Length: 460
Ligand code: PLP
Image (cartoon, rainbow, N blue to C red; front, side, top):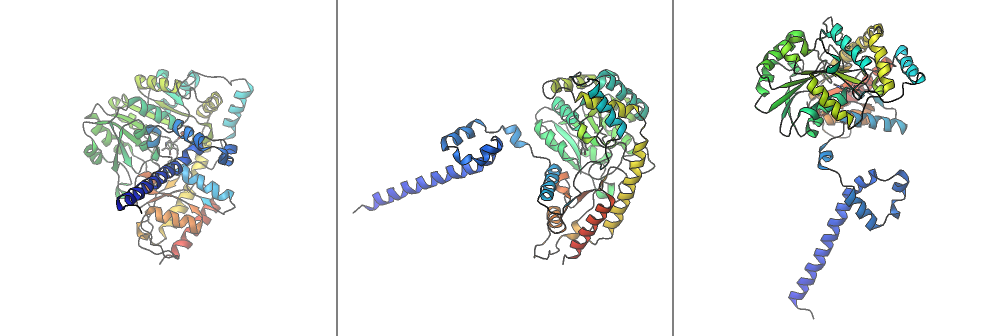
């Protein structure tokens, strides 16, 4: 007979072995997701053929950097992908979560791209843009925004997104704070994190039309503040800053000469009130000298897939951004640059036609939503988004007994029951709201709104 001591030792040994094996198993299972990214589709299907030691070796070599692990994927892209997947499964999903115009790129712009290919403009260009295009951008800034930039103060990249990324990577040191008014476009925060900066989120209230005020800005500034990102017109709220509002912000910034300003004016042309568009660099020469005015072809010119963005700003920063781009993507597509050249040089009458259609759809969306009990929506002056509140639905019970507790619950319930995709405000740093993109066929938009109403009426 084994003694009590020996028995307990054997028990302890067996227990430790089982525990160790379970830990290894859990680690391998949790890392399996990463491995799949590195296997081709055939390997994924055949991956039972991969031996344990091969799997272990792959895991060791392809572990991801801390930098990339910190980065979150874009919530709006995730939700739009989900809608596409559901559609491909045959579900009758209506996506109100995408962020792009539903109009085709105008023909004269498409033709300029086609001609560029035919004429052989298919090679590399200058890293941060062809001088010809940069000149057209200078002309645009001068004529439309009253901003005088030299060609050397212009940067052209693969979309406004890359321009902002290049800028943040060029100016942020670890620990620098970047003020981001919320609700915000999700990429700003992720880019700041990626650059090892600290996003300083400043909440802008519904009653201020979700706009940054001089007072809130001033209270957010401290010794570590390096940059302010301002987005006008704003995604997701659709708010538009007036010249007076921009002036009051720049009055504060004048007192803080170390702060750089990045303004993202990508929705410049999508303003529906009589108010003219203004950008912060216009307000003061001193402010212009430390502002990067970012813009692009995606929204107003309906060129999301062409990937073309640009900015005007201090040469020192433009050069740094060019250096970064030279070691990452190099130039934006030369073909897209020729198309953008045509877009900027030609008349833009088509934008007015599109605006009429956006206004109609915005009015439809706002008036419909405001009739739904529990939802309140303001009437945004710009973009193609509305950002209604949904906290009036909290505490209500779904037909299968769940209580809605936040914006994510509301959007999930609407997706599962009405098959309409929306983006919860959480994705924009502001809970209790959700974003609807109304750049979709009017009949389909109405159908989506009716579906939302039907399922909300089922709440108890
Ligand atoms: N900035 C804002 C506020 C946006 O909403 C988007 C796209 O949704 C972008 C930038 C990206 O623009 P681009 O397509 O030029 O990269």
